[in-house]
Image (tube, one colour):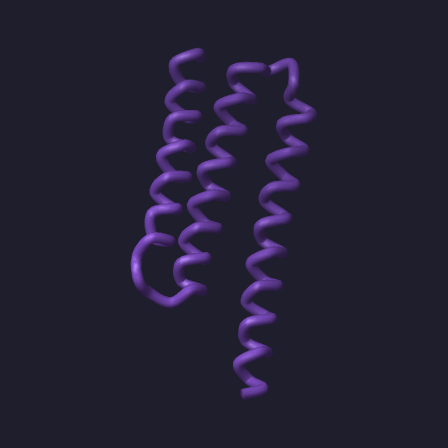
Length: 91
């Protein structure tokens, strides 16, 4: 159980770094932010699942954090896309 949780936490950190890498490259800003938000959400979810396996007594707090993370990142992505598209439609 300990090895699996460390593997999940390590995979989450890899997703964090992998998602941050496109910010340094050229390209459309929204495409960069999309890659960042998807990989950060997946990385954070993997880290929280790894912590859930490591500290199973803290499951209510970790499940609350996981659900809040998923809902918050989904809403943030929608708001970002909506404000970007309405700003470009006024031009």
